[in-house]
Length: 222
Image 1 (spheres, rainbow, N blue to C red):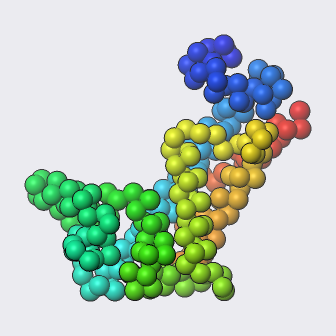
Image 2: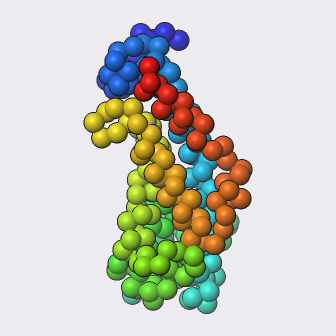
């Protein structure tokens, strides 16, 4: 594919952001676009593993805390932890029951990353008995609810950026820079460690982003 075709397919505005960072060198521009795409592909796998791990840990915790294998639907009742999300939960439950495939596992899988991270907000954390940080037995000393909520929100926003096909290879001024991506990779690894697992062991099913991020950094040297 030539540069002109890429502009037609992906839009001039989108490609121009990459072109500007590459001093309008067409070959480097297309390399950068491909490298960014590949880094997003690798992060997708990493985020997949982390998100599933996080939501399962939360589900296990509240199943035990509430002594209720259907805690999600039951906590959506009046005055429950999930009353704020009642309509969405009840609607999802109704669909699964109508299809006769309802289970708590189905409910867990249907809820968004935003739903799970919101449970660490000040009000949700308090309404959950101030117990949810127990899923992070190895968290850094002094790391509190507010810190964790902010960190998980950053990870969620990074996830959404990739999901919405936004670049992760620039700094705030539009220069080629992998600091943003590397910072979030480290943050994900930190939270896997906080849950009591070795990041290398958890993430070995996914391709690591380091190699492709190194290629992006080398484009700066041209």
